[in-house]
Length: 217
Length: 374
Image (cartoon, rainbow over all chains, first blue to last red; front, side, top):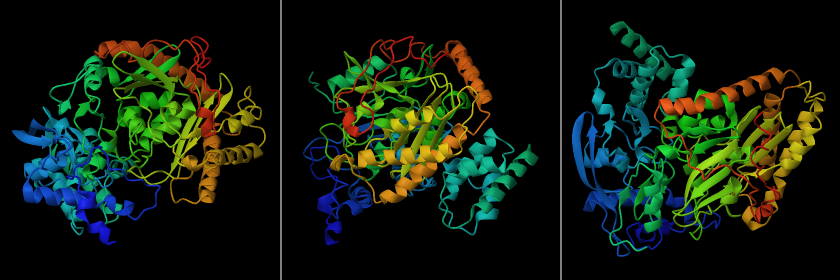
């Protein structure tokens, strides 16, 4: 699979007149399997070295300037590519790294942030959607509240990659239902993948957080 | 019309400016929730000339209940579709929406986006997205309403796709809404496959019962580029249900119906290269899956006896929704007029749809003759 590492072949910066690279899933060629992972690496590598992508010969990269509120603080981010994800802008442009970059396909839930109070997946939300909106990242809660405490106590044995997203989901759940049933907890956490721990730990943590929030009143 | 400076991103709050922008700059990429497009963008496979955001257009988001039909705005989110009010009258649609991704994904994923994503007319081959909602819309007999700057186009949802699954939207065309008959009977949706995400399901199945016309519509998807209705199974079932008593007398009916539905898989599979199975799932496994899903869906929708009361409940709920719809829209300051050109008055035919191996005679009943609503 040496061609899998031929960056030119997949580099999305290279001139290409169509918006979508033409890859035929039915063709059965060896190239299809690598496409899902490689270009994002190419993209990240290119940006780490040279900043935002360089416009190719075939046309300019459409960029916009975005003003929004992140954790209550007004921010303005210039030159955001229209298809940059909210997660990318939060992590790589604004340095808010609590929301994690997991699968990039909406499966894992590690990138969850609140957009105007609604839970959304940072990786599948274009940054320009946040224009004029209020974004809440896991940083807004620090690690001092009941939810963080309960998650640390019950789920501390895991690697912690999924926890920022789970923390936000738990807070959104408790704001909606102060005493959630186990079914409600399972339902709301179903969008988060954890490879370290079984679900029982998270259900215990959410129950404990709910009781702690209730005690505080 | 040439444009001197291309727009990078537009977020109109009304439909008119949206279609005008799309007419002026057809390379604008329409983005509702972004949950399909951003997967491509994150993988470096999408580089739009600019985005036309349609997530802040009130006319495109919401559900309208009229005398004959339900009209669902194309930018209505999957989270909206799982609302208890809608679940009460269109359970199959709510179940299909619920089967998509996680709760956080459903806050942004939209009905129109689920149907419009993927390969386009004249575009190169691209992976086919799951389009789980399409199976249900086909079973419901939904009509897609498309809008260009000057024109409206209405087409049964299956007619939006070419045989290979490519979306047949013209440049500058925007899906504005889907119109479907207001459900007054039992419905069900089933899916076998991974939980949401970009993968295609092994099988999706939607079952829609209409006690007022004594018809059962079933559609299956996942086996080919476009889901298909299996009308022969529904037609066979019609005579084997005691509609007066609300019962299915012969317990063997369920298995026979399931077998007929599973046989429906064969038609698209043998329709030629474009209809060939698009995944590595063995056909025999998928056939068994279809049989099991069809049997379960039918048992849940029409148990051996005693479902007349349930039908009555559905009819009451549908009446209620119709009565409340206009009032609630006015109270909440939502647009009263749905994004459609007016009631459908004649038959809508899709030439060539018979090639899918499914329906050959798709017609929409003339207004007032829907037979669904009371």
